[in-house]
Image (cartoon, rainbow over the protein chains, first blue to last red):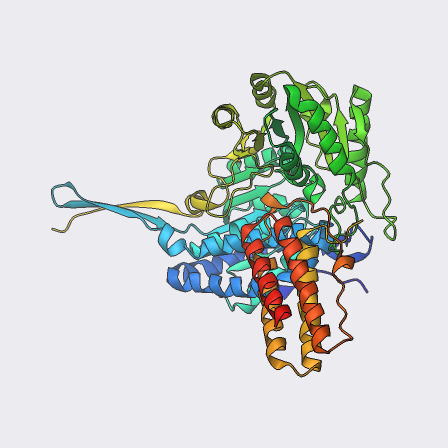
Length: 483
Length: 120
């Protein structure tokens, strides 16, 4: 009997009232892991009510006590680290090391949350007029929620939840129905903390639950990570319903390589950027822009290294690239490769149809390299979200910057060079929220905001770091005198 | 294809090797050595947990676990020396392949400890 997943509401695991369930499938083995309920609005409403009821007491819980819960949470996450890793691998398909990196990042967000007693402090100025003082305080706001994606099922919810609740809010997570098991385990750990009932809630589901979150009058703010079309909808819908919103969308990340780059070290790092998590991350390098004479050695080294990557089931320690999330994702990615070929790109390495022994039905796409890609081609413009790296050849640095800035996305861009001048110019001129210099995955750590510009981000305050404190609190100004 | 081709493959091999060495020393009645290896195992588990970051996750080339097979059937002094030498060589070879300094330092320390044991 396949396990039917339950929601976590008001401090208890409760059956959803859903009538439809989404199969949760291990993309490598095709094993049916569980069934995820498509929770209806009524379930979301129940979670919001529980979170609202918990809020008044929780916000009055001293901030130092709230932080203590996070210390305990961190310890539990460390103790169960490898179990968490295994769940991520099984439901998502990434490799063990990638899952370890993800869980580590999640724990770093919990580490950041324990600093809330320091970083949510206000400020005060005496005598703004004779005998009158002015104070700015930060206060929690109520019930926040996150709608999170399949590609980082552990890390992304932890970008938000720990900081939000340590600031004094209560919280609801609505994870991707493709990967709900990571959050199920995280909520088992949260349950062990003995938090007041309703401080943290989990509602499983798809579109209906997401819309209910966006439209519910009891939710004050929503964090979203996913594709650009959906991020736009989330941004607009939440704004229409008077909520704060931070919506991180898709990406098309460019990596420029100068002729003076350390080619071997650069390519090793580009491998991780393009093929890490099978290209299913919003920071994945998607287009390599080879500048001038960098082209030939770069192309040769990329093909050599990429063709040597071991594709397989992520649970094996020797697997270097796992699956994509589903059969439909595989089909979409392979059709994008075909489109690139039809547009005139040359497949130097074609990952379509790759088979892994023992996992013949797994949703594997091998590392793919398309050469001769031009800025007009769809493969250069659209997010593929798979292990496909396009090579574009440009004559000089200025053209590389021009090409990158034409993208409608602005999540990340990297430059590989040994010249400080180019590095500085790249950082200064390129319109992307996360810039890497000789780093292919420019991922902000928990104490920095995760950037994103243009159609990669909708909102004002980014996730993580000081932006998270701003997002999860409101300022109150106190002007006082004593007569 | 070489089997020690990822950060996790190397660290997991090291952890398993230390576990096997602990059992080996326990069976041989060398409690101090068993404690020492278990401490290394525990430390390596922490290192594996704390130091994998996607920014620097890169494929690793040129290492195969077949080159570091331990013969744990021989509990004699010479057998123990040989096992310690193999372990020292494993850590010496793998440390420079990992691009995170904290991990290198941990592996270098293991190499040093095993080399000292091998020379006793």
